[in-house]
Image (tube, rainbow, N blue to C red; front, top):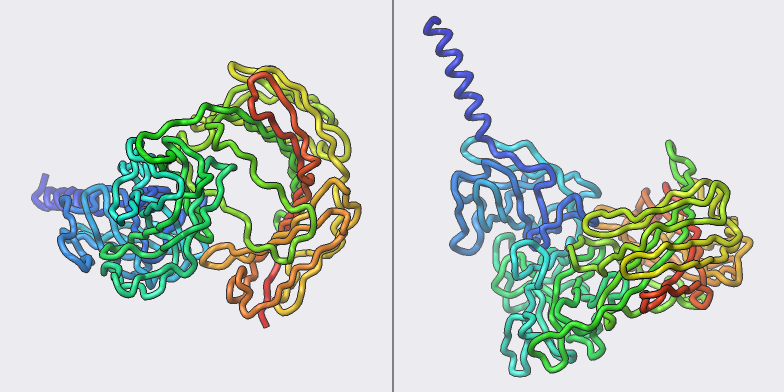
Length: 540
């Protein structure tokens, strides 16, 4: 082999070795720095000013932590940029980087902001992420983003101790919760700089925590502070009073909602008088639902109908399994406000434990009966079925269960009224002006049903919405879209707006059933849902 050939091969090998050392960001490798929720979790995004973590390989030659404030823009020769904007760095290592999302970063309506890592060996390929006004995560006492929350009990003398199962918070007492990504604040510090003690960086709208199991949680009413934690970078602090009627236990789920995001659930220990927590005995409950969804929108899917059945059988502490309040039985002032809580990241064991009740049998429609076996998924037991077209209509639908290890057999039926006929034309491109009321009309409403209309106006920072509820027999509702800007909608035009109209039973009409071992009983209900996409919100 000639010297020229040897040199060419060596250059090629060295070139490949150098290329292999370039930093690589894992797919879906940019996550919330508190919850570690990434693109595979509901509501995934990062927020300006928040703490994020990045995972990959060849990210830095060695571990290095920032030693002073303000945070540096480079550590061990490693830097991170988002849309070309340098990010302050907390920590770098060959496989992980913790950084602050630049506060000046513009929002992106989808995964559209490129993240790039640069080292002495080269620059990574960009990974696109989503940026929203809030992307809430709560820090935990462990390093997995789930489990006991980073929560302090506040004594009457102002002293603070860590909330643990052996050191519970008492109803009526105050606590501090620490997280990141909870939204905009007054007097924000510069990127990489700690939050000031004076003036405090208060939240623009304090994010309210929720306590309790998913589906049964209640908002905390008394928030005393929400904003950046003084002397820290990118860390939020929410101080609130534990309600007197709060559920007690060793692992009461706590979440924080800040439009448009919901945090992962973390554990807080609550016991009257404090001290060692005590769990309530378990209780079991069930929910069966039939749903027909009709979607209208731009091409290619101009009209789409889906009919489904879902069932949940679950168990949780009896003091946390408290039914949610029913929808109002009459027209509420329009708008009623944004009462829709989005889905958030999940943590194993933090939702009611789902139960196997054997195979279900669905009857009462053409093409039936259908058998629905339990479907294990991610540690949960799910029951879902897609039904033949025309299954959900006026008539009686029936579910029978064979029973399982903890819940015995049952037989329950539900009567479904005819669907409503919406008479307000809502083809794609329909303009909804914000300077006069919007009226929705329909026919054939049942006296046993409610109609709820929700207008959603997506924009780069989220999906703000307004909603309104009326009796189905009213045949109409009017939403007063007047404002400059209206507080629940974005302060500019949206050409991706949509309307969701839901018809569901009034609270007294929700069917209930019982079964051996089903201590809290079960509900059996239905809904018709109409979705109109491709609409526009206009501002004068």
